[in-house]
Length: 244
Image (tube, rainbow, N blue to C red; front, side, top):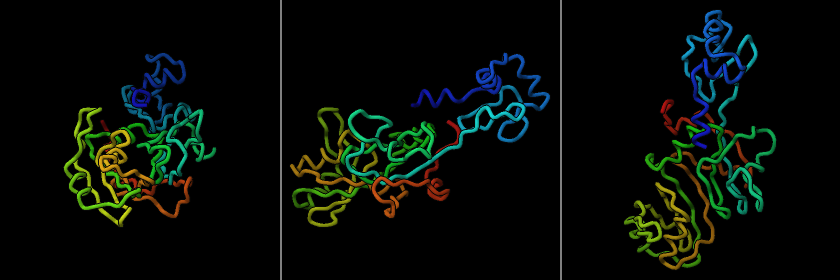
């Protein structure tokens, strides 16, 4: 995904050449005559940078006009976080035909986990959101097979050593909500991390439901499988840089 997204950034002359077959040396006169428009304005120079969502037209013909899409979904149990899968229904299939085929998942959930899932066609945004360096907290509501005790809180706060990877997890927050229910907050996403952390206490996880990513909370009015676009206010909660 990342390499594909990076390839969508190019100089204007290279972009025009790739899209139309016009030689790069012949793009300069087109710019001078005002025949190329970038985001609704006459192109400024042949080395102007074209991004994934830059609108470009030549003589009024649209060469690129994609619009960024940012969705939240209430992922149901038994649906895989993938664009395609031979065995299970995918979250992309739940969207139907109203969205373009270049959407991908920004932060996956396991097959039987539920809750907040983000989908987008903006590769830079999803890379930033998933970057371990950002330490964006994710909150989960977990139900367990056995009763919880206060010692869980300290163990999660200290981090746990996973011998398979040879790493110690970052400190995690755990709040006991009831005898068999807890809220867990992570700033990383190791393989089956929550299940493995509770596994140290031999306490199987029965349900795992993501309720928030950063300050963005799941819209609980969405039925399982339903999705909607993020509002501008919700999107603003993620201060993704425009360059980089």
